Length: 342
Ligand code: DAH
Image 1 (cartoon, rainbow, N blue to C red):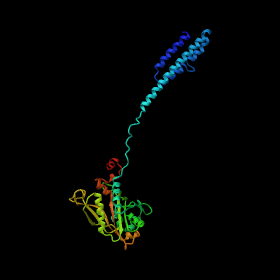
Image 2: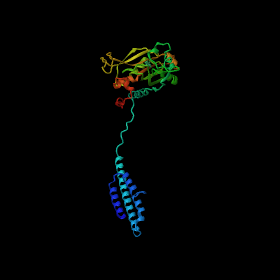
Image 3: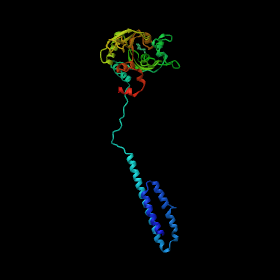
Image 4: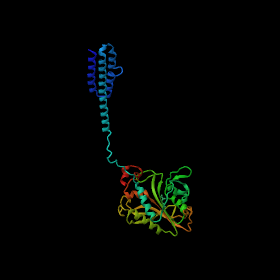
């Protein structure tokens, strides 16, 4: 076969291969084989010497024409592949900028916090200041200053998490009474909501960590009638209706006299049910008139001033308010539970 015929055939067969190629790699292989530095055309160039002198110019032109025909076919096909790849990518990565953003769920207050905030409003409207104290307390503030000296059996009433150096996790919010008296003096109206800790076995009605709201009022000639007035107002605001209460004697070293204030069971109206253990009453609010020793520990003269104090179980109250029957749910952090209170 003449060189001219060979070139013509190379041009045709290469054009067919390029048209059939399906990947960029295939095109590259064809390029190397045909127009590459060591390719067929380069070899043909070397054969020029054998061509008759008078035919060389025409043969050279033919060679160049074949070369550029192959090169432009390769380029055209390469461009087509790249355009298709870009098209596929644009299709795959398409996004709708006008679509609404996925909903962002804002945070919400824990049910105990909701009850706490509500009571803070009720009490500030009656002239009470909201105070907080440390959760890691001194033995002095948690016990001694509240008329519970080291040998006192009442220390065993609260199972305490002891820390090093005379510190402990406060077992109640009552130590904030002492801090409040020292800081603000008399007359005084304060509440102290907060977290408390007891070394308890956890079950549906016991937690090692729970919330209380302490209250204290110190003034001149404060009586049990004053105390009852504030307690009834508090309960009316909480339950949004008049609630029947009864006072029973209760022992707490930091009050004298001390009481357990019970409310008539809201579920059965006093008839008796499982919630009130068939007594018709639910224990809710321990309280009493502040013991003179406690006033003294707070730097207040019991000859001039007296007062009442109470310790409300905030966790307990939130459970009653929302009908929660397992205290462990409150601290479990389970969103299925918490989302019910948003
Ligand atoms: N601190 C007590 C407790 O956690 C509750 C208490 C009782 C607080 C009587 C008071 C009070 O202020 O007067 O068991």
